[in-house]
Length: 220
Image (cartoon, rainbow, N blue to C red; front, side, top):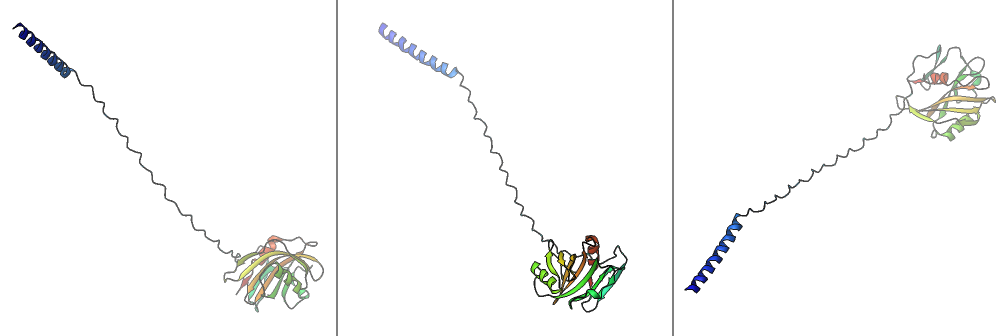
């Protein structure tokens, strides 16, 4: 009897021990659960700026010589009906038929004492307006040692006729070293030259006056 009692007590104590441990486990607070770190959304992707195509290159408009208008000097007008042009020159200048040294010359006007002056010449329009052609044209009017002094500038009249402007140096048929401001204007089969000129040993080259004279050229 004692032995059975002893076993019963032992079993009972073991059960109590297991029960106590279970209750202790249930009573212990659970460890706090750490929430996951918030997910940072990716930065928005900025689309590339649209590529702007380059602006089209506009070619420069052709240069048109200024229209004839009032001049700063008292003027006389010379008109050539054969080729249909007019040009103004200072009123004190006189006609110089003695200087029409070739059939190509149309008219010459200058101061009574010789220079400065303006001459009109009609060449055949038989080649491109370049240095070689210009030098050859001077030889045709009995000039010598021609040289183009600077650029040949191309422009146009209102009717589309080409105008070539440049400065020239040469030895005249009378043996003087001359300089001139030239406008060669293509008119069909002809190239009409308008040249305001001087002999610099007698009279300085007057760019302003010569430009003013040549800018009065008009065609019908």
